[in-house]
Image (cartoon, rainbow, N blue to C red; front, side, top):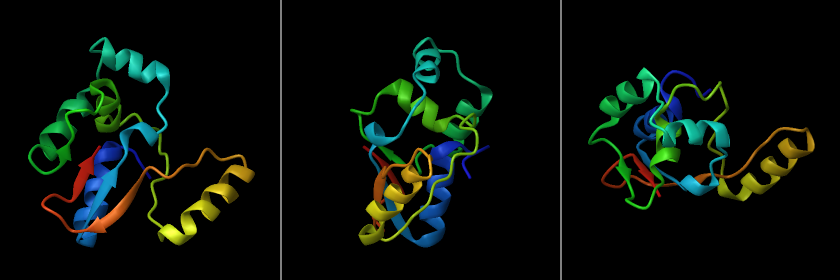
Length: 122
């Protein structure tokens, strides 16, 4: 349930607690265009700064990641979307079933053996 710690805070906690590295593909994460537009204008919440401080030095973010999208990922205003990890062999089936039920669902990354950091954003 993505709320107060934003997508990146919750993803970090899942990965760190599980002893793995999560690799998120930033372009695959659904983002409301209006939220990205506000971020591009520098209109951010206090949670953006708090979550950035919490994760500073603890996650790896590729230089190619769009700054506005990254702000949305740090922000706590993600309204409780669900973030789950399932075996790769079952992800397509889960996405199909959720979409058939009218739920926006997509694969946004993968679980890897623990690397240098628990979370990588590409």
